[in-house]
Image (cartoon, rainbow, N blue to C red):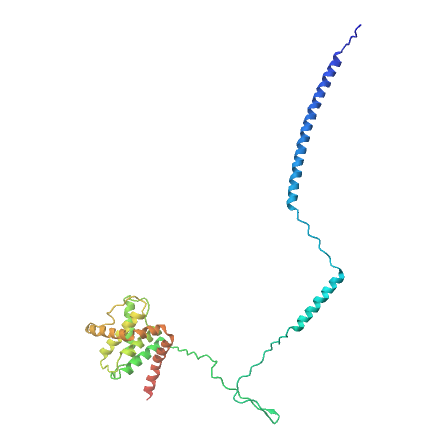
Length: 295
């Protein structure tokens, strides 16, 4: 007789669920195997990279030094000390430099007389240590104008009625005319310009002048050259300086002064010593006129 197996629906359902659980377990095992495989591969790569870096940074071990025995070290030290002492003794000792005081040469040497030192006289030095004295000259414009007038009056001694005030008036009238007519913005009469006019007059005005008109024409020609050379303006008119009656004489005198005095006119502006000499010479004209009056 055969055996009859009966399967209930509940047991069938339980077997199906067991089969599904078993299938999920297989899937989980496969994913775990794959994950472990990836972890092992990444770990191998990390180990290999660290091994390469450590291989690059490895330094060779230094060679072991051979230690000398203490007795031999002591002998070497004593020999080195003995050699250093020998070399120091062989070196010649250099003398220490000592500053020696120098004694200047004297005309009379010191000697011992009766147990006492005789007096020593120093020789005077030929070179003077004192700087040359600086001369300071001061004078006002009015004082220099009076000196200029006194010079012209003393030079033209034949003109008995001429006085210094008249010469100064010629100068001031021309300067005032140029200011009023607008040919210049400021006055020309300054100490430096008066010295320049004196330089020209001292060379140009002769002592043989016997006419006030001739003297005035020569003086105004000197003024025209002084204005042209030292003035602040580019050009000046001829009208205040030149008369219509003496045009030829005016230009001849101007050319003669320029040819003869150009170097000194340049030197007066370039050389302070030369300017001081001319300045002092002009100032002395006042003193000379006063001495002549006293006589």
